[in-house]
Length: 286
Image 1: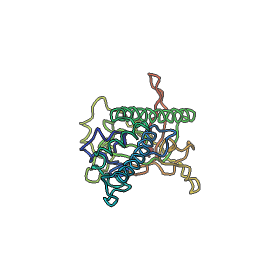
Image 2: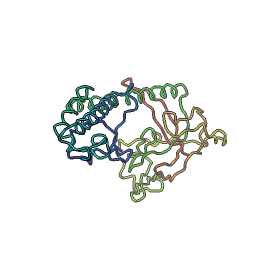
Image 3: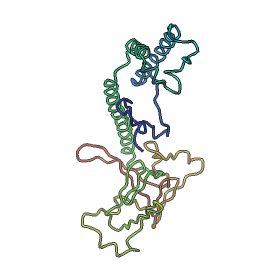
Image 4: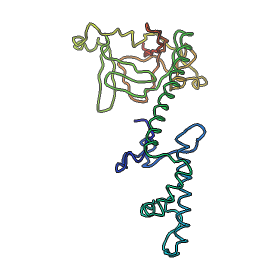
């Protein structure tokens, strides 16, 4: 799903089908409830205040005009109602009222709004990245002190050669592992090559060892029902702080993986050669 972004409607005039918010599934959306921490909300506040005042001024002028009749249908809602009155906005009185209110409340031009939207989108992405990086470093430090942790993880995405929990695990080019993708049911099937010898010829010299993605173990201690609330499914807090506990026993080959499947994993803290920190996850198998 694409991320929601700020944009100026003037830049997409005539392309109203692109205004919709895909996450909320509504055709028109903006927010204005947190002006203390979001500058776009201030822009919306100023615009709303200007439009409300412009409508009041416009209606008052029309009713006080000698050429207008009190029964001509002019009333509140021409600018703020569900149906925007373009004829009123394009009239001389409407343009004058809107321009005056825009100047009074400091409503930016379309060009400035476009620049503000682009800047806010960039800052929002940077903030999200900084937040995620801080969580990753904290989790890495926690894992480093425990060497390894076992936890249940929920599969968020699955593809022909990978599955995603919080980290993505690739299963392609793994020695001793047969990978089958069933597109009709979006199911990834993992099995050992002992049962499928013909697939050995497709392996290359650069293939990884199965130990890179699988931790073979005899048994993981099962938790009691009272302890299950300690296992959370979404990282970074998805990883159970009890290093020898997993609510799900080790898996067995052949293994079928679908979206929302729950799998036991072992999580490690890795220090890379360039000084970066990383976190790896392996399936717990027996």
